[in-house]
Amino acid sequence: MQIPDVPGLAHTRSGPLHWLATAGATAAVVALAGLVQPGAATASQGGPGPASTAAPGGAPVAAPDPAGVDFPLECGGAATVVTKTATGDLDGSGTPETVAVVRCEAGSGTPPDGVYVLAATKADQGNRPRVVATLVDPEDKRTVGPDFAVRDGEVLATLLGYSDPDVPSCCPDQEQRVSWKWRNGAFVRSEQPGARSM
Image (tube, rainbow, N blue to C red; front, side, top):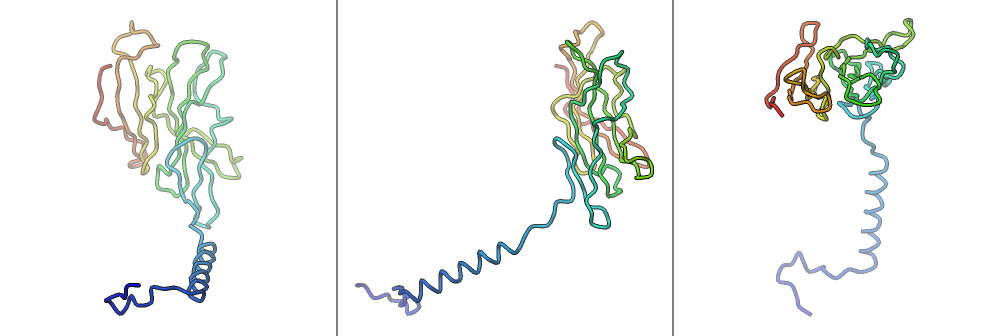
């Protein structure tokens, strides 16, 4: 057996009492960790499905659900389809809004998208979400690419379009990265770096 040179390390051999004390300390840490829980999430900045934030009173407020909303689309009798959603507090009010990408349901081809901001209504108005802003009008003949999100109160999207009316609707040849931010009572659109022809 080798004797250590440092006096503080002289107790390197452990006995049953040492293991009992270690087990007790470990059990105490595990028990304490079970009592401490993380706080509730207060916002969601994107992803599928409605999110919620905490209202000033502490009760969560759900983001508006686009199901059942009458979107201002002319589909000639066809149904509308919500293809993407993102949620977040866009106007700094403390309650979340939902941004929905919507198009007419088509059997083939790529119909243009509309991008709409939904806000919740008050209980005395039936609690049904309503369209409060149109960010992209389907008449602009644009579709929304895979880059679509709400981050830090800003709507980010990649818009796909056409350089000429003769370009087939299946194959957009232009890409534009844009964002919208709520300023002075309106959504202001900005161009982001990276716009290009495809």
